Length: 148
Image (cartoon, rainbow, N blue to C red; front, side, top):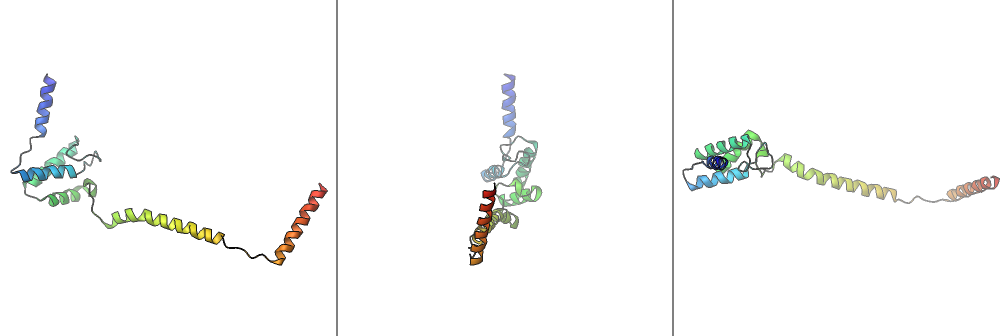
């Protein structure tokens, strides 16, 4: 019974955030769902039980209470923790390279294979001297076979 009461007190403590209006509550809810916990890595700060997630929720709450917009809070968190903290990273030259570089490597590899196949498929001219050399090699082979 005491365990159930303590669990109820803990749950009540987690939901003790107070807001001036419904818009701030909605902004806080959206932000905690969009920001990633730096420790848990695949949980948002709303679902994470990590201490750093609690600190981030408190900071988001403070920024929302100060009247910052959603984008300003996201910018603050990105400045503080890097692009990793946001589930929707912006398109930067680094992210473009990460997306485009594998495609370039595959295209260059395919082009290299095609180039090598075309080079290997070039027919060599066959001359009368080649015929004569082939006949000599066959005769030499047949002589060795007879001697054995």
